[in-house]
Every structure is written in structure tokens, then in C-alpha cells.
Length: 458
Image (cartoon, rainbow, N blue to C red):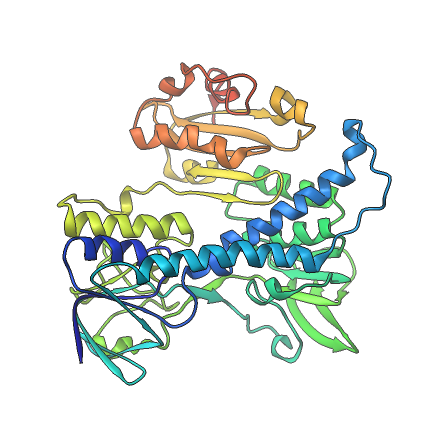
């Protein structure tokens, strides 16, 4: 039996920094990891995928070289084995760095293996019993394999297995028209594959406003990606070495045949094999651990942080979970999940940056609101770079003058959105940002201009 002040299960984004804070505070800490240090972000999420996005961007820039007066005489060739090797090298270095850091923490003991509860305070890892005064679950999530007809009868890829490809698919069919699916769709189209996106809803990224969804679709279709929305009764069958995906859409052929299929229809938490019932920890219908505003579960000495709590599905929200827990336990600083403003990016090219509420959410709230919009064709920096797809819009409360939300899709949108986000966290009126003097030429310099040209939200 090993006894600790704190037991952390999972070495994803929230686990290692929490181990560091607790061990620095003099607590005896156990960190349990069953597979790879760094979690989804380092191994199968942000770092490897954005590395691939960067390679795909270079390929697309080379194809467009003549638009900038540059002639490339040799035919463009993408070496997928080298693309994968670069991704593996960068991801591997990050993973190794996390593991070295954690193993070097004084007062922290690392256990490798799968953890399960035996009692509310006791977990078993292999043949070892580990007991903790406090337990923090940072177990992450994995891709959902949908219960669609034939899905389990054909070879398919997930966001994890597609990262092992070192050859180019002839025709990649992506089932799922949201963040993961669209990033892979564009990167593989830029690598040279034929790509079709199949989405059962009427719009891509339908959590966004219709104008954002339409813009995303235009960007992808302009690069030759076929998009099939409103696809009902999606089904799969083998046809020799290929996979036939059946779909009933409003228009277009009833089937599409691909050499590879990527299933990107959502994620589920890794909570089904932890023995949570032995600890009395409650989950919701989808398996996410129920937590309060300080991320404490239904059992007072057990917390759930990161993707497994259903309160965020991003690296930045997972890290913020660590900050909330550490602030409340160690700093006497009452931080809460509900203080967090929704913010994320979609890393197609050009990217989408989102902060706060969508216009549809503002309308449903009943607020009087003002909104402003500017297309990238009227943003000097975008014109100079030859990247004029997209737009930026900001919506504010007409009575309080607080910024309610913003969406930027265009060059540098993932960075420019922070101009808006920081003012929202400061709870300053939009005039603070409107009167800021931004550097020229940048994309963000037009945000103050938008705020000076707003009209009532229809």
C-alpha cells in the first residue's frame, strides 16, 4: 500500500502542472499514467495536427507561388513519410519533455498502468494499491465510433490512427463536419488527396452562426473539397479495397466511394473503466463526470479536470481547470468554471477564432445588441498577403456596452481574437477597444474600426 496526500490520474494538460503545484507545496503526490505523457494535445491532438497543418500550408503556398510572382519549375511533390516523420519528431520531443519534468518533481512518484477505484480513497494500478487523501481524475477522452450501419464492418480511421499514415490516401471521406474533421479534410486535400466531407446536419460547424458556417464551406470548396451536408442514414460497406459511404442528401449522388474513411463525429470521456461506481462518483448520460463550479465531483475529495468533466474540450480549458483547482486549494483564491469565457479556434486555413456568444445565442438571450462586420477584402493586411477569404464581426450589449461575442475568420484570426477576448475578461466597455491604437498593418487594427460602425443586431 502506497499512501499519498494527492493522487492524480492522467498526465494530460491539467495533471502535470497540478502535480508540480501540489509537490511544491510540500504534499506527497502520485501521478498515474497508463500510456503516453502529455495527453491528447501532445500525442494525438494540437501538436501533431497543427504540425501537419503547417506542412499542408507550405504545400498550398508553393502551389500558389506564381500568384506572388514566384515561379517554381519542378512539379510539386509531397513526401508523406517525411511529413509524418516531422510530426513524430515534434510531438515526441514534447512528450519526452513532459515526462522528464514530471519524473523530476520532488515529492512526486510516477506509476505506469491503468488505475481503477477499489474504494473512494483507494485505487489499484497493476499489483499496487495507491491510497490518496485527495484524488484528481484527468483521464481525457477518445474518438466516438458511431453506431452507423456497417461502421464496424469496414476499415476506418480516427483522429488517432490517421496520424500513423505515411502514404497519401487516394480519396479520403471524412464523416463529420466539425473541427477535427475539417482540419484533416483541408490538410489532406493540400497534400494531394481527393477529399469528401459528409455531415448529417444541414451546415458545417453548426454551433457557429450561419454566416460563419457558409464561409467555412466556401473556403473548403474553393480548394476542391466536396461537401455533402444534410446526409441522413449514413452507412458503410466494403467494395474490394474501397469503402462505400451511403448517404441520403438533398442533392448529389446517394453514395461516395473512398479509399480511406475518417470518423470524426465527436469524442467520449475515458471514464467507463475507472470503477467510478466503487467510489460513488456520479456521471451524466454521456459518461462525463459531474462537477461543481470548482470541479469537485459528487464525492467531496475527488475532482475531475480536463476533457472528462464535460466542461470544456480544449487544451486551454484543461489547463484552466488546473488553475481553478490550484487557486481554490492552495491560493485561497475562489476561481470558478463559470468565470470562463467560451473561446476556441478552428485551424483550417485561414483559421476561425471565436470568443463569447454567437449572434444566435445573443438573440435567444433577449438582449438589445449592436453588431459590426468587415470582410477581409477590406482589411489591408489580408489583401497584401493575398488571403482575403473571411470576415470579422463583433457583437456588443447595447445597454451595458460590454462585448458579448466575436468571430474572426481570416489570416491570423486565432491571434487577433485575443484583442477582443482580453477586453471581455477585463469587463471593460467596448469603447476601450474602440479607442485603442493598434499597429498598422495588422488584421486586428480593423477591430476598433468595426466597433465604430455598428448597427442594431437584426
